[in-house]
Length: 276
Ligand code: PMM
Image (cartoon, rainbow, N blue to C red):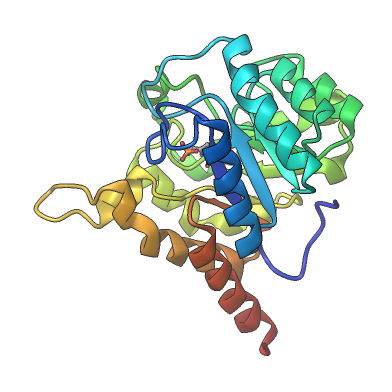
């Protein structure tokens, strides 16, 4: 698969094989349930299934590498054998390497290579697309790291530093995908500022992935009497972000409900081209 411009924004379906992810934790820890959900997303038209074995919800504790590998590998092996295109959502080089060996084709690293110095070597050796997300620290610390004077330029500069590190490690530029990291060491005001200036990230010269699905800033936007809308009620807002991201030229959106975002990116593609 290339990371160049496809004719429409790609839809990456989230498969969290975790007990505690914020919106779907515990639903797909069972292997059969995970495989069935992945197939359901794939048959609906998802372009990539993103398999993760460690929750990144704000405040969550880490799991050890063996636990993460134990969750991710059986799922990757089975889905790759069925021909699904998979990314592995991990910050650990050992997990990424094992998942690539088992058939995953993309590394989705929410730490942009910062959490594990060996990740760049794995990405360079595998010659696979590598999503570098903006990140400032692990989940238990990230709310305290959400301090910015100018969030757009700081996220851009910090991402640029991750790109430079990846290139220096031998990762080909055409394999790099950037992600502003909505909700990761960001408060709602930061998420909106980043979405408002998606053009800055698109202008960095690499494909851009947007992960807004069901996130807190959408719950806050849709709050009633100060009570955030729960994650299950954020689907329409997620699809709206997918449509806007696609109209602006994002390479992909990472979402839990692929159906509504596939419709959204279809509308965006028709809008952009002026024909269906
Ligand atoms: N968000 C989450 C997990 N992985 N990966 C990328 N590239 N971008 C994101 O925004 C992102 C991610 C957290 O959401 P989840 O707990 O619902 O998976």
